[in-house]
Image (cartoon, rainbow over all chains, first blue to last red; front, side, top):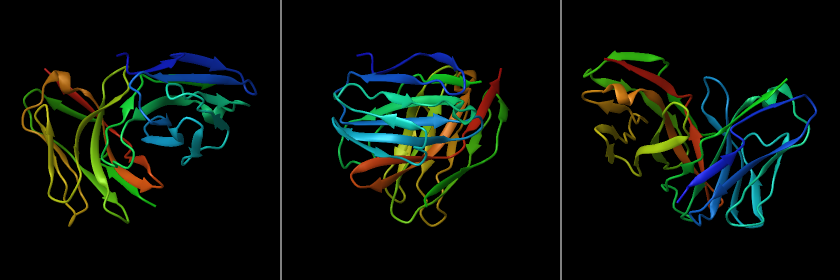
Length: 115
Length: 114
């Protein structure tokens, strides 16, 4: 199993451009998450999904959109990139509905710079 | 809302030294508590967890005990190695509408010198 994979690894965007960060998991997990990690800070939840077709906002959703058309994929869309979105983005997944002690499995991250 | 506070870093130790990284939390319910580790260039991975008061999580020589009375979950290791150099995150699991939402501390960068 590859686990959670993310593409691209690095990206530089100009202000106002748009892009999609890809996330795929091959563990048949129901739950998927997007986090951002700013320098010297912990991770903050952007969006999450409890299954195909179901998504909801996390702590910092502004400027982002998500979709979940399949169990495996959970892309994150930036429509109008801003310098404040410069960050490292992590996708994660977990299996057990209702198990709040479940382990989340993280991808390697995408480092995004907006200039 | 819920929050997690970790000791400020970075922390630099010599090999075989004793390690403590402090973590305290604020939560309205009864969260599960976690330590995640991030090695250079990689994503986070679970190090250990505890689900209720007085539980001790342990893995790879690391331990942490869920202390409800002091709202703490300090990470300890008796003898650190160079390979333990990484960033360590304390987190709690917030229960909300069937989804597990993790709330993270700011992370503590640990460097072990040979």
